[in-house]
Picture 1: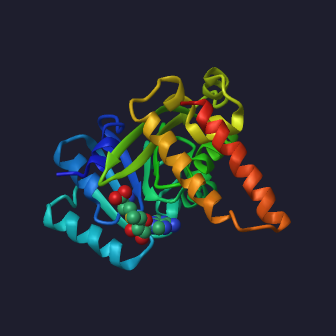
Picture 2: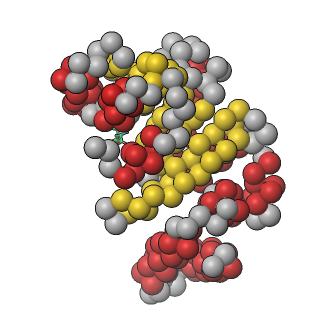
Length: 232
Ligand code: SAM
């Protein structure tokens, strides 16, 4: 049984592909997909020994060795060029996801789809995709254990189009998610509420600050807050 978050990620995996899960930890996602007969082959990548062993044990216990390879290494280094049709990177910060993609970009030449679930900093991931020619084709929000998670699905294509179509200024669209906004995702108001809450909390903590930096930061936060408020 997958968590709500991983179940939402799984829904974007197309049938019958070679799927790499980078930072797979217990390999729960690939084990589920293999058991459901949804993948041709799975590659679980893990940089850390503990999670690598978790993945290996999970695959062995489920007798899934024929379908899932477990490999230890950093990011996309575990893949041969053109090996993976679909690459999943879930449950990490957006900056780390963008760095894994950037450092292993040559492995993605034949990849048809990226499924990315940043725990924070989704705008960093969107900015990388936009710059490198990956078009965001779907976005999702899922609530799990009181937290709100973002899922970005990207395919090679006209990366700028969804931003243009969103009608928002680029920086704002990178943060809101052009499709979450355009399609008025049911949890979008919840995302706005959380974005506002975080900034208002920082603003309060800066209240005593009288330095130039504190004042500039305050001004910037106030602008961001009114930007988000306009979307409500
Ligand atoms: N993907 C799973 C999920 O969404 O439930 C596990 C997420 S877990 C919080 C993040 C995992 O990423 C950890 O197991 C960590 O060891 C792994 N990780 C972090 N940096 C990595 C890298 N550069 N390459 C591969 N794995 C990495």
